[in-house]
Structure formats: C-alpha cells, structure tokens
Amino acid sequence: NIAHDEGQVSMSPHRICRYSNGQGSKRKAKPSEIFGAHTDTTFVTIVPAAAVSGLEVYDEDSLQWYRPELNARKHAKSVDPKGEMDSKFPWHSRYLVVMPGELLQITSRNNIPASVHRVVAAPEIPRLSAPVLLRARPGTKMDVERYMGS
Image 1 (cartoon, rainbow, N blue to C red):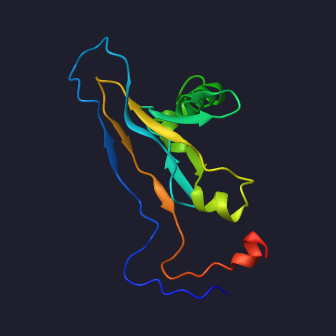
Image 2: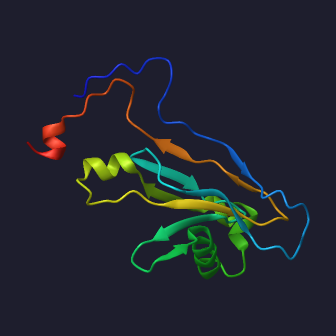
C-alpha cells in the first residue's frame, strides 16, 4: 500500500490539444514544427492516434524522427485494405501511442528512457490530439531504496 492524499485535483491530466501552424491555406507549404522536442514528466503519456498525423518520436538508434501515426495508418490499411471497418470505427480510433516519460526513466534506473517527441503540423488541416499524462498522485511517497537502491 502506498500512502497518498489525492486531494481535489488529479495529477494525470487528459488534455485536448489543437495544433495548427498558422500558415493559412498555403497548399505547398511543408509541415513545420509547432511544439518543440521535449520529454514529459510522466510515467507514460498515452496518445490516441490522430486522424491528422503530426506526432514525431525521436529514435536515438537511427538518429531520426519517427511518425507512429503514419505507421498505424499503414498497419490499418494492411489489416483492412478495403476500409470496411472505417464505417464503424475510423482507423485512428483503433490505435494508441504509449510513450515512456521521465518518471518511468527514474524508477526504471534509466533502463526505459523518456521518449523525446515533438509535434509538426501541415498548414491546410489542424491536428487534434487528446493525450493522457499518467503521473503519480499528489503526496505519494516513493520508496527510493526500492527503486534506486541504497
């Protein structure tokens, strides 16, 4: 049992975000970074795949940005090439992106590094996102010796 006093406010917010690069309807403009590279102060951040991709996760092994929502779309098309499931459940509603955060990096003794990520947006369509940032409850005391050793 972990002692805690949750209080009136949850420390695991569910945010609703709208990202737009503000370039109006310039059709030939490239997507631009609108929320810079960062890690989250969470155990994990859970992001439902968006209809308009724009989340990029940095892959330190290949030294490049990876777009998990584009990969999810490819997977959805390979599973349902005719798009028959989309009438009931659009492809993006069937996928989640789960990213480790700084708190998981600490409690795993750096075995699970925090995910560096950013958001890019194309000028023609805004990107909507609804991440859940899973954090510890307020007042929770971590057993430091258990997680970090003595």
